Length: 160
Figure 1: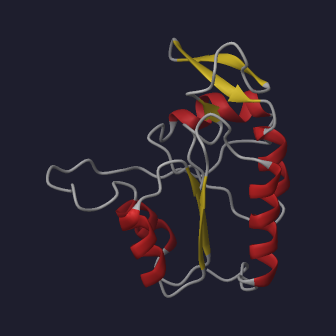
Figure 2: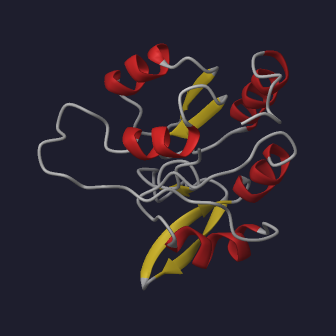
């Protein structure tokens, strides 16, 4: 599960010293895309089914595969935005619908919180949460951690 803002689209960095990357317009809004995000996602695609887990929903496929050099569109989650969900992270229900309770799942996001951690601990399937800093995004260390986890903790990747 891949978030976009704070993982691929960076923010909060010192404008005088931006990280490697470039601006891209998404529906007329500038987003600063990490220079290494495409490479990282291509590397992860060898061991993971990549899924957009972002408020961008289907918009991620309109802009990011071409901008990041990905081979094509990825599956994406759609989110319900119900009133009264203040006690649960707004992405969890959609992740559960997509992955189910037992499928191995790794989620990289800049907004993982206590409800996310509790949810991950309660899942029956192997679960890894990877937190990013929004000014830095996904790093080589995150990718190495994900690859290591996929080979050690989730050997049943081919089974859904």
